[in-house]
Image (cartoon, rainbow, N blue to C red; front, side, top):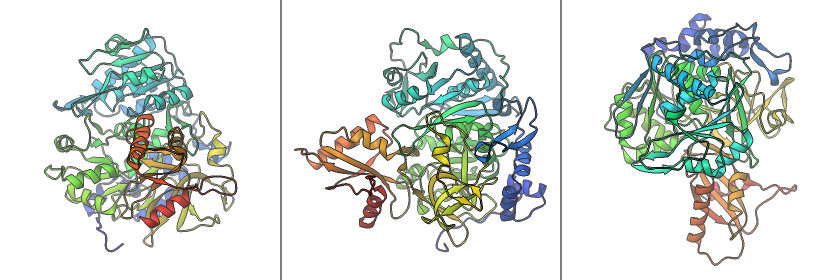
Length: 607
């Protein structure tokens, strides 16, 4: 590791950090001792963390966690009553809660008081049209001020939110609506991107969505369906609303994550899940009061809800840029809003480096970056660090069903590009090899209970997905996650992708089966296998498709074009096919399962 660029934390950064403050509270001076304490004294750690975050409870918990139903069914904030949205409005009334900029327009600031008034008007609007506590609503919007306010308003009103990424096709929208059956969906007429207007409401309508509330952002007309309403018709003028107080394990959000079957897993978040994300933000991303947190994302990906809670619970501002994060206007936005924590996916950084488009901006206000969603490239992360005059990158890896990360970095340890310096505070995992022995390289298994871990799935047997058949460690139940890591000699970790048939593409997790189901409909494909291949120099995975041919007169270029178009139009335009490989037969196990790992190994070996 000595050949890599290393950021060493200055003493003043360490002493100002939230980790250092917490270490002082518990009488520890060494970070690794502190992490061990957070795991060995889990109840004390989470009790103190709930206090540090100022989590508001209508009725205080009798114990921080109850495991009487087993660690796999841990109940956090046991016997408490709360609404997590109340913990998002504890800064000064005139403090900036959201900073946003529409393409081609000036920067706007929204105070905490103004955001709360908008949230209350939306919550009253939901009740006015007949919705009640427990009714689900869907959100299919870009990450805007309205999206943030709608998300908070629904949870405040006791209505679970189904989050759908604005990049999804009508087919993918329909799948998610069928699983969750929301009573209402809130969307926009169009997406505005780089001067173009991309249809959004029409995709929602094509997905046979329920009653829609449509925010109009274009001058072009659309035809609403019989029961649909425009935003102005829906929004209430009433600016007070009392939070619906619930049990901690009531569902507040349903997000989706792909496993190894065709249908995405529907993962419920409860009122305690955001505490995990806010905790990570507090300790690992070191978010402070009145910081400015920017992470280009969407509510349909877990980092959208994470951003809302990690920023607001920590009394920081959310910075939202409505355009694409790969042009110079985004760089100016980061500079002019004085962003202090900038979240990225590695694909952004690769583009910034290749085009040098961000080099003319002053990003010195950034205290740290954070990177997630894909495996990063060391040289690109080093470049990113230097863009802000030598600032660390908090590598961050977790999952929707975790509510945050299981492995991360900190601002109190040396920072090495593309490596994780620590297991996340308050949680522990082990790496097991194929013989299920503890190893420095292998599949990752979590040791529950950990705040944020899901207990249920809407459309799967939760125990079967995460616990059935897992090995035990010294008699302790382990939880499956599906990632593979390696621990380096210096104790740090590097990501090595998935051990199952899921992959991260453009920061979104998708299963091989989902991609193959689309491709197998093409006339020239008899059967296919989709794999994610890691570039030799590191960086985001590339999507490679192997296929067995049906007779066809199409040229190779025509086949490649059809494959790319099918994936883009039927799944997501962010999923880019990088190679199409013809093969006589797909390798299979004795039980007839496709050996995608063998294809991946063979492809990487010859690349």
